[in-house]
Image (cartoon, rainbow, N blue to C red; front, side, top):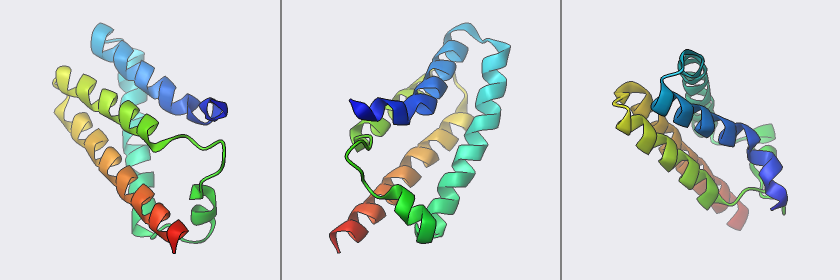
Length: 114
């Protein structure tokens, strides 16, 4: 459970999405609209760069790293909530974030086993 400190932002964005979906709080809208494209661009950049150099060092698994199932759970919850709210564009962005994260993890795992 030492890895919980590594997922604070991911947990917070899931909470913000939940608050927005169930209360339509204006502040939640803006956080989601700003955060989602930024994280999507970062994921695209990580996958296109082939996880090279410094990014590869950051992506290596450490004993306190977050289990991949936890990210799948968060991304799945975010996607389900956004689909429930009929926020299709942001839901598609989160689906892409989820897919790109899986690709990034698969590449990282493959490089670790080589």
